[in-house]
Amino acid sequence: LMIRRPPRSTLSSSSAASDVYKRQIFTFYVVVLVQQVNLDPVTAGTVFSIMHVGGIVGRPLLGWISDKILPAVPLLSLVGFAIFLCGLALATLSADWPYLLLCALSFVAGVVAAGWNGVYISEIARVMPSADVGRATGGVSAFTFLGVVIGPAAFTTIVGFSGSYSIAFLVVGTVAIGEDGAINAGLYAASIIATYDNNVKKTLLNWRKKQTSKVKKKPK
Image 1 (cartoon, rainbow, N blue to C red):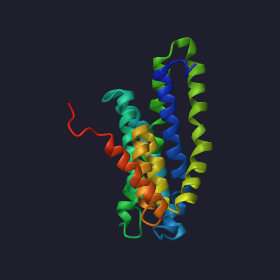
Image 2 (image 1 turned 120 degrees about the vertical axis):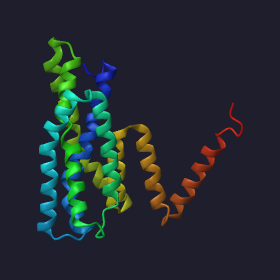
Image 3 (image 1 turned 60 degrees about the horizontal axis):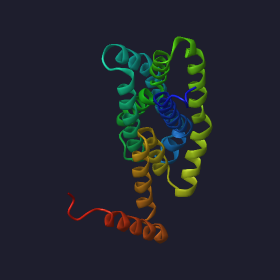
Image 4 (image 1 turned 90 degrees about the horizontal axis):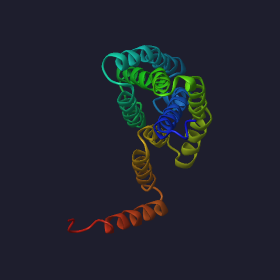
C-alpha cells in the first residue's frame, strides 16, 4: 500500500532513517560518554536520563507545533535537519565538553530523536483514505521498526571499519536528511580516514579530480 503511493513511501523511508538514528543513539550513547567523554558510569547514566526527558517532552511539544504552527511535513523535514545537526554535535564529543552543554545537547537530541513519531503517524492517518488508515499506520510502523534492526548493526559496522564513534554518529545522523546528506557524510568520513590511510587518500583525491573535470569552465 505504501510502496504504491510515492509521497507515503517517502514518509516511510524517512521514518526508518530517523529511527536508525534514534536506536543507535539510545544504544551507544552511554558507551560513548564513558569511553570518549571520560564520564563515570553514574554521571553518564544521568546525562542519558536527560535525553529520555527530552523524548518525553518532545512528543507533545512537536504535536502541538504541528497543530498550531507548522504542518507535519515541513516540521518533519526540520526535525530531520535537526537530527543532522545533532549528529554533527555528537561527532565532536570529547572530555573538553562542559557538563551543562553536554546535558543541553542530550535534551535536544532526545526531543528530535524520540519526538517525531506521533506527528508522523498522525500525518499518515490524515493523508490516507479512511478505509486504509488501519493498514497504513500498521504498515508504516512495521517499516519504521526496520530501524531497530538496522540502526545498531549499521553503527557497529561503521565503528568497526573506521575505529571512530564520531564518524559513526556523523554518517548515521546525516542519513536523516536524505541522499545528498548521506553522500556528504561519507565524503567527510573518508577525509578523516584519509589522514592515516594512504589508499583511502589516493582514492578520495582521484574521485575529487573526476568531479572537478565534470564542471564546465564556462557554464552557459
